[in-house]
Image 1 (tube, helix red, strand yellow):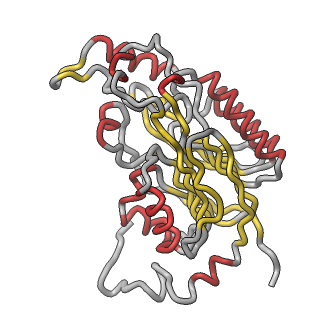
Image 2: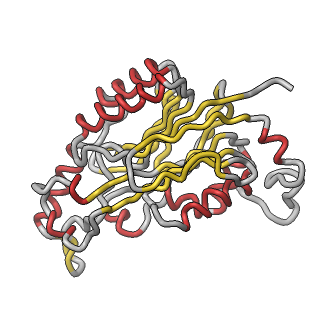
Length: 299
């Protein structure tokens, strides 16, 4: 049996919040550092560029929008990412230098609407594709539009790569759509740092019989610029706003690396893709453990 090994990196870091250009610089540096360690697949968190706006309501008070909220929205919108743009060119150049497939979460600007988008770059720095979050959760619906297409899975020399963002991973049919496309390396960037998220990552690995890479940010309140409009909305936020929890899980649900808590950092693991067919001896969600005569996904 030939080895089929992939070295992966999950980067747990905070952006330079609400500053696209500085965050792009940080992302490129982190990608290069992972590349220097020989990582072939590199994952950065949800909404890394320019920020996951944790704790902000964008001025929503009793059903009406306050002027300060519109000013915060303007700053967020001005620092969002056009696809393609100089920002995506810089990320692509970093992927090319690292000689790695890279996935990074950006807030995508499309006209007057923002989307929580996961971008995928190949090892030559070209954009392979993107996935817009299908269903923003809770207050995210105030600021992000909904994605319009099912999540893609990309055929690469490392295997089939795809994934879902944050609570999309709680959508059973969205997960099933990835399993049907034969996902090997399932990417799950998130903003959820609760202990229950660890159970979700392990469940998906067991259910999909795939490797799961979960990636979160480590963010403190001190990192948030205090000149932001609506900054006072953070008054009751804790000092550590997101403690991380990035993790890599095997197709049998075993934790391979992490979880990483309470600091910025990078976890890496060398994954043997031969574990995937071995894991399907007794379970295959879209094969011998499926009942298409009774249940069907029509997409």
